[in-house]
Image: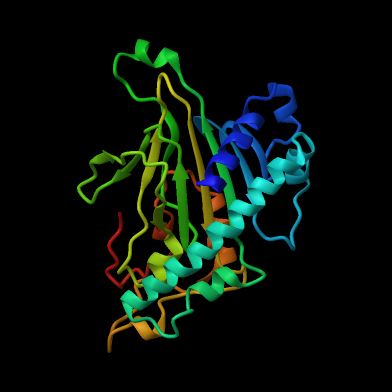
Length: 278
């Protein structure tokens, strides 16, 4: 909880800076500060955010600008939280490997532990929107519906609601906020690596009228050159892959060209394999 509260307090200090100060850390490249605009393909939401690289080998100039605008305590809070959440995530994916009887046990975690792991960390701030009440019950999208492309994402938020997931029958259900819990999302890459046994969850965030929502998400991705395909130890005898093999770089590049709500894996499904779309 100490990591949570310290990082949340420091993040809010940044988001409460004058807009002109925050804008010095943007526009995102994709790292840095973003406001309302999500990606470069026309998606927008009632959100401002910081996207940071978690790989110490790679330094983003925009990330450096973020910490130039804020005291050292913010950088330290971010780094402490990232290191702690990484350690927990490695354990979680190894437990998932145990449950799926994947061998070796570190088949997933080694990709996240790799010094070239393409992982990132996002701080989202959804300001309150008092005008919402005038919309007569209509929703205001904070962050539009999407799946996460990486292997796994680990989300933690304050006690403000807004997160929703899409069920198989296409209905949206709210996820009750719990600031003491982590929410683990399967990503597209893990869906492929398990040949559809685990499915990436479609989710979105709705804005609140009275309270701000702060969330922090670690996205665990493999190295860019890693080939993404169903894990051999998981496949039943005679089972065919539902997906064409691709590298993480190829998938990430394709995802960046798409809109948030697109079914990105559709381009990589085998046409004769009978894969189930979403």
